[in-house]
Image (cartoon, rainbow, N blue to C red; front, side):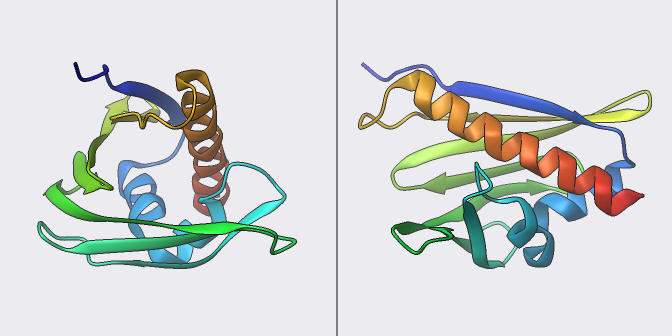
Length: 139
């Protein structure tokens, strides 16, 4: 039986166009796509179209470990929704404008190697890092 998706979200007090750009621009992605300050994202590439692929390299700053997060975009609705497949799993990113903020909600199929809480916390940390970077870039 398949597990339920995990959902994490954050609010960014910036215009939807800036939030979308921060989430989809390789230059921006390199600034936020890691869960803690002892990690980094030295490279990011994305072909933001249905059928296009992405690859983000995440590494410990001390070079002790790293991995590539890669997948294929399955649905793109500019400034609203991104869906992608990665490693046999699926994720949905929603951009929901609310008064003076944009709610960014990510739902994804969990993997079976790590506890659900650990996966949720890791993805939430990355999303919180994204929110800080997107807000900083919009100032």
